[in-house]
Image (cartoon, rainbow, N blue to C red; front, side, top):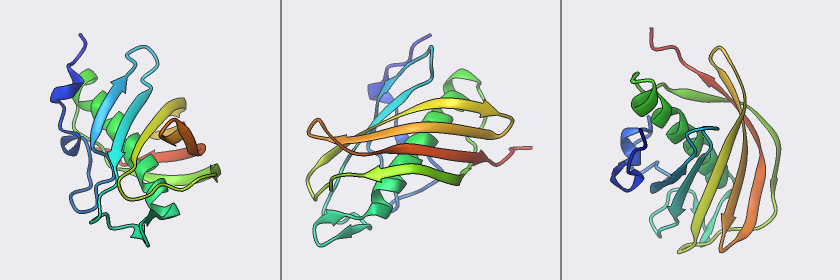
Length: 146
């Protein structure tokens, strides 16, 4: 059963709350691979905006929250489980090659490469205006809901 993604409120899938939300929308979800794509428009009140530019920490947080949206979507809509809290266990080969500025729209795609118990490794790619600004891998450790 495919879900109409335009009706999804991503904040229901995230453990974070405003003003620390770095994802606006879930724009694509692949039901075969569980790949996930989100968007985020950088507004002037963004917490990790420095001199009109999204900081490296902001880009990393956008990636981590895209992982959280993916995990939340799978838990809520596919597995029918509660949302799990995840923690960044490791950052591997993250390369930030360009910057994003206030008003830019980020599109972030994650692909789950490996899952074992409560650990996931995800590859990620962040782009703005069809230009890659960051890519790499995150290891996510999930808190058990038991």
